[in-house]
Image (tube, rainbow, N blue to C red; front, side):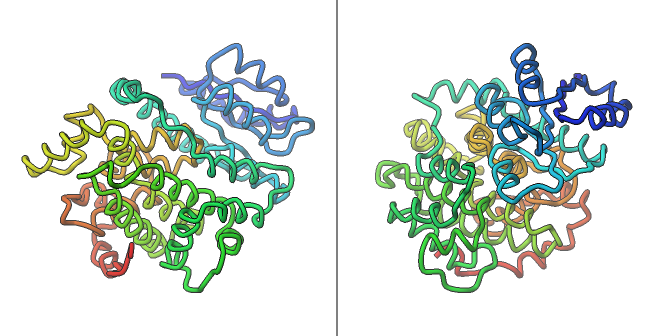
Length: 393
């Protein structure tokens, strides 16, 4: 299937260079080119595209502004931004509206791989069974209000981590969860922070907003109303997986950004359980009974009862809310990483390993075929040595 990809840049010579560079991909991609944001939006309104790849620095409407428009008008389109020498504020704004950021000049093979992975993820999250399940919910869970407010601040012309901290501090429960994660060495940190503002300043924009999202989601429902589903147990397990995933990614030489993605994806990987238990409680109780009676993992029973699993449900929401693709990938395929088209270890490999090792009594087996293909099977013992008995406390 041909993928329709739109490239946007205000420099005609750059567009012509892209046209020549990408000519070998004509059998896989249908290419279109726009000389600015306004023209790009006109093309998007007239035809269906799979991907938009835009330069960040453009006069009038820059790349971040364009992708914000695309997100609102065409949410299913994959959004990729190319960044060169740009201000920190511009890059920060772009990070809040783009699925992926790539450096200029971009290697065509890397671009091809990113587009392939992003489109595969969209295909998974557009499956009929998943959409049928979501249509049965009274409403698809909306972006949590505090998360939306934090994102809005970070997308402003002059974002302030102090103001982000003040937003977080208004909710005592969420503030406590975030400080708990920071003090539990969630990202390898080993010092005391006294306030949400201090935590936000140290963590940085991307990690702060994602931790706010996680804390919001686990605060949506009354634990007593979800029983026998134990949201406290999911929260403890998620913290343990997040911390171990970050440690595994760090041990495997992943970049600092990949380590952050692994840690946050580990924290978010079971969010779909919370959504299913909260919105379809009777069916979720039936699923738990089925899993217990047959002695199978919850994900197996979920597919029989719901036609899909909590992994796809969580990934769908995170894709809808615009989280970075590596996090959405890791959530979507954490039980079956071999089905993901991603190459390399990255966040997915780290989360898969951490999910299995942090709580193996729940029947979360390691995919040894997948690990073998990556050549890391012999690293499992080292990862086990990273386990922290106090995780999640």
